[in-house]
Every structure is written in structure tokens, then in C-alpha cells.
Image 1 (spheres, rainbow, N blue to C red):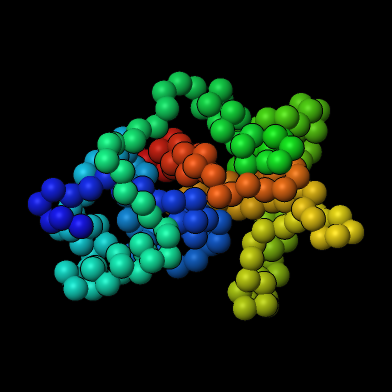
Image 2: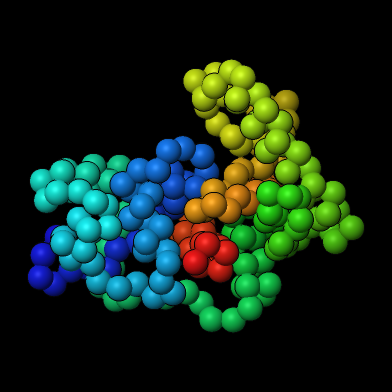
Length: 207
């Protein structure tokens, strides 16, 4: 990365999944991603900027960034991307539909309140949102007993006889806020919308 010029960088879908979908100790990567998500528009970051954000020395930061790039957690852009304008109540349902093979999904808060939904009948959204909070509570209860090694994932999936996902629930941990993403059908996380969704949620609820 050119130290004087800087570049526009943004987490990839894989980077966002690492950042948000498994509660873990804060890492230098999660600190960087969170800092990026604080802005509505990407700003150029130089080597010095990244070192300051991560709290690392020059050599240590260069090594960490090399690892982040190697894992495909971050990508560069020639122009500054920015969040879409408008009401999240309109924007987010359109975005989350792309994460489901059935175009049916919802996002709830940690208390089981449905924040955004698409494709799911209105009479079902409240019950499903409450279910997501219950599943998160169950995981938290047993993870505290058995530990992360026994229960390595916080996601839940309801599958058919062949093991194909019919409906799943994934946590989204952003700052001090916790959300749950419910997807009907096969999930499609390797999609640019997943990045924008997380960016929008962080910018609205965590800044």
C-alpha cells in the first residue's frame, strides 16, 4: 500500500462474516473493519492511518495486513464507495433478499424484535424474530458450560433429509449491539449485499 497516497479499502463478505457472525475477542482486523464502517463514505487510508487504527507498529501492522489480504478479508477500490441514501426500512429488505435462495429473510435485535423483513408473511415475522432470540440465548447458555471448542458456531440451521438448509439463523455482532439474521432457503453470504447490510447496521446502531 502506498504510504503517501493511501487506498479505499472495505471488508469483503468473508471479512464481514469473520467480524460479525461469531462473537470473539477484539482483534486488530475487527478494530480496522469497525473504524471503516463508522463512515458513510470510504476515506483513503495510508499505512500510517492503519497503524494508528490497529495500534500496531510498522512491521507488525504490515504483517497483519498481509495476512488479512491473504485470507480475502479486505478489498481495495479505485473510487470511494458510500452507503445508499434513504430509509433503512426500505433499503434493508431489498438488500437482505439477495442473501436467501427463496428471497425470504429478516433481521431482529437481541430481544427478538423484528427490525427488517422481506418475503415472510407479516403474521409470521414476530414469532420468527422471537425464535431467533431464543436460539441465541440457548447457545449462550450452553457455550458458557461447554466452551467454544465444543460449540464452535453460533449459527443454527434447520435442514431437510439431505442436510440442505431450509431455514437458518446467524448472529451479527457489531460493537455492543447484537442482531440475528434469519434466512429461509439456502443462504448466500458471499454477496456484496452482505457487506452493505452490515455497514448500514453498524452505521445506524453503533456510531
